[in-house]
Image (tube, rainbow, N blue to C red):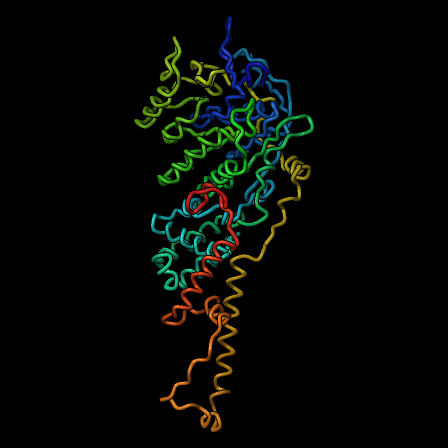
Length: 527
């Protein structure tokens, strides 16, 4: 890994010759985002590691998901073996001075790194519907569940809160129909089944507190190197919707949390989104529009986003247009779709005299790539065929002992390991149910005692002369409103006024549920 303070991060170099081409990624253009594509086994992981080292050396923190489990070696000093030495000699490349880089390990399941959590409310109905694979009608009902929770001041923090809230809405659907619209039992059932599937995949560990503080990703060590944050994603890939939703939530959190800074000399954070096709596969139009919005605007927050996938056709055109830095590894044109992908990749890279981009894409060897990066004026440079420089750190995963040592010495050790279970929707709804059951029990117990025996029958009023209702005050009306007035068939004018006023007051001063830009019911920012 070679660096130049003037030109940027040297990531690839052309074949040996009089003046071999050198491909520099300019740090001040890294927030214009990028795309790394290529078939399996063509060298994308090495490119990721080399780029991460370059950013870390410049003091830029990095986040990347370790899909194959072999990126954790960036935390250890590298060693050039005989095989690698021979390859470097053939390609005219100098080995990088061995180095290690500060690393923090994360894991949604808390097994291979620090736990990563988000609250249900912060994730929001749009991303959650995507995770649960709900259709449009079911997603609409899920939005109503969140809206009712917001209006009633019920916090949705973990999975049991959401399950309890769905059951509450389903059991009392007729009470909410007038104000919120029809709520079908079938849709509630589909949501509950989806939640059960996520729980079976271990996704319930992702929901809860303490929630991830994005600032913990943006740290530098005593030597000024940016921390490389590695998410263990090999097990997470077994739940691809959870994986894609989690990374998209993190991206939206960065957008929501960081202030506007414009174009900086170097980014505040670089975010690598591996297996990006999972993000866009079968995604509804509204979600793709939100992703495009976040990718376009997060640049001004000082964040660079690099999508990593096998095929450039995996990325929608609206998002692909935002990705200025390109590293294209080999593609194999075995099928009509492969041939279309080769043509699409060639058409989106700037041409170079004497280089047939489309033909070169199918001829590239392992560790070789077509590279087009933004120049000092923000223009794509002519595409160069070059060899990606090997990383200075260890290629391959760390040992279990090394992983345990990294975990123990981490800057966030002990911060996220212990879960917090605050009183929220589950506890409040459970308390309401218990109170109602106790009241009904007391009523059943008191009724026979007060209404049996000769004396009680003598004192009972005649059926033909019903007893006038007791005089009711404002506190009584509010009590009915908050404690079960829905049981009456018709409300008085006074009750309607009080109910309207209480509803308005509750929405203004009640607890506001924090939700990110991609999690908001209406698509707005945090309230």
